[in-house]
Image 1: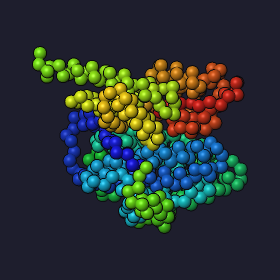
Image 2: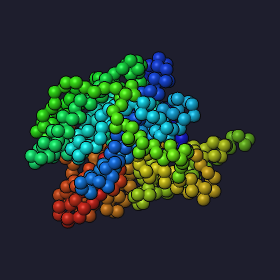
Image 3: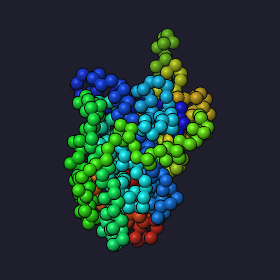
Length: 276
Length: 170
């Protein structure tokens, strides 16, 4: 990831032009926290998808999965670079990605769930992308010019993920008896992790009110519509909204995250500062 | 006239010459397209005779950006401009709408179908019609939404039976 080039945005073209006074309501630390949550979601899911590289069932998917991983890792880089700038303590994007422990990660639990079979990976991606797409579309109107710029680009990328994984979900669900059963099992297994996507804590609420963050809770109907459309065509049954897992944003993770970090962070831990 | 009065004119001339050099840098993955054709080269600023080149990524994770930045540095340094500063701008977000007509024609001649229509919110499972860059037939089908690079999808022509890359509309 090491790249010394500065990443900035053109502040003239986004935000600030709506005639409203510049908001100084939220401390930079809360924007940092929010940016870190977005970055951690993107990095961890990007890493998960990259695990498929060379293992996908067909060549086209072996291209598609790393392509989606690359979108997410690209988004993570832009977000970490901005988070590091907000923090202002001289930490580089790499330090945020490679030198924090599990308890410091702020990603939702859904993205760290294991790849499972192909159905689990596709449905996990569908569930997340159907949330991230409208989230980034809303965030593209943030009064924070940098977040708005990153989101505008990411929204277009996530639209492709929804499309691709939606089509696969339909193909698997409305396929053979075996693929239908596996797709339904994947959906049932992942469903308890979807509630967390729409939680809005006090930090995020304040940012939403200041026009800086997207309001996750308000995106629920959009997500419900997309998922309902896909599940109907896929002949899959929407699980009941019962007990929902939560805690990722507060640093309470499943055991899976530690294994991801052990793999992803090994090089920087064993050879601090290694670069190429 | 004082030296100060000359400065802006000199700056503009320097910028124009530097632009000409930087604009010739090609995309390493689609070498028929220059970064000017793509709309990746956004601006060049001159301050105290030093250059700052502004580029924008096509996709967030496009690995070609690093190579493009290096090639701009090399091209400008070779042409005697000294080492420029390269700055990535994210806003406004890149769109295939910025691809020049010359760029579209070059893509087609190279065997890559240029993006169809204007970027915008598409229906979730809407169909696109992409003409085969070899035989021109509209009887084509998508093989995969994702292709050899982030910006391309894989398609196939049902008439001439050739598979081809399609530059995705973003």
